[in-house]
Length: 344
Image (cartoon, rainbow, N blue to C red):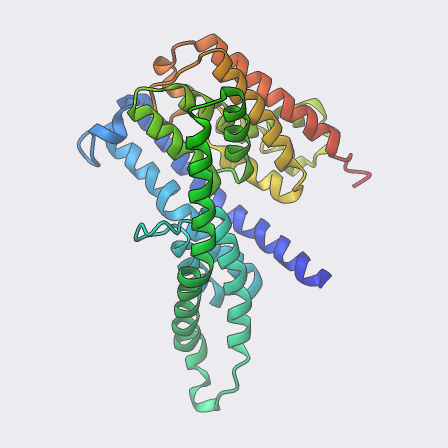
């Protein structure tokens, strides 16, 4: 059992390492598109209409189209080698709910799909076949049977419960939106930081978008703070206590700062994958930041873009102070839960 857990953890880290370049490329291009074309670019400029829109929508492909399937593909690859890539990618693609049926499971769904796909492919490899048709196993039988099985499983078994969870979170946020702002900030911040770009994060983002449509821009400001805080916290923690992190970890400091500036929470995923204790640390800091954002009355009239849409903020200095507070809280907690490398 311990070996299986170790294999799954290694598969998760492998999947994240292959996914990260898509996050970086997509996130930076999206932020650059906002910088060049303005914060309303997603709603008014289709792909190719301007240079800025072209840059923006290319970036959205990296984040919205490739990121989740690639995670599923390479989680499966870590478990089942090359034959797992196709099956895992199909499973990861199903996690994006391509037909809009309310079954989106995102990052978590892709992880589950990749793990199942990997072990499924390993099982298919052991099918006893005559030597005459054995050569069809990697090129025909595994891809067809594996892809069909994982897609049906994602649709009929996994998608429903995760979709129901997403809908429940949406209802909770909508109910809180009409009541206590402090409680709303706590829940919103925790949800945003919990899975760092996954379905829970997307629920809170969808809630903020819905509020924007009614002229309420405060939830989006809370979103910005809560999403930017985790990568900022990791960067600050590594600067505060460098001996608690490896050289490889510290090499990611510039990327984490970039993630914080560009509102790309996914930069924090590799660190949370190594130490799951970081997730509650992120949640505490992001919740605190979201609450402070509400209490200070910060609003942002942009759906994304990080500091590149600073012109859309009503209170620029309070926003950056709030972000720094949120990041510092999480960073302090990360330092507390991280052992020095020589003791790890």
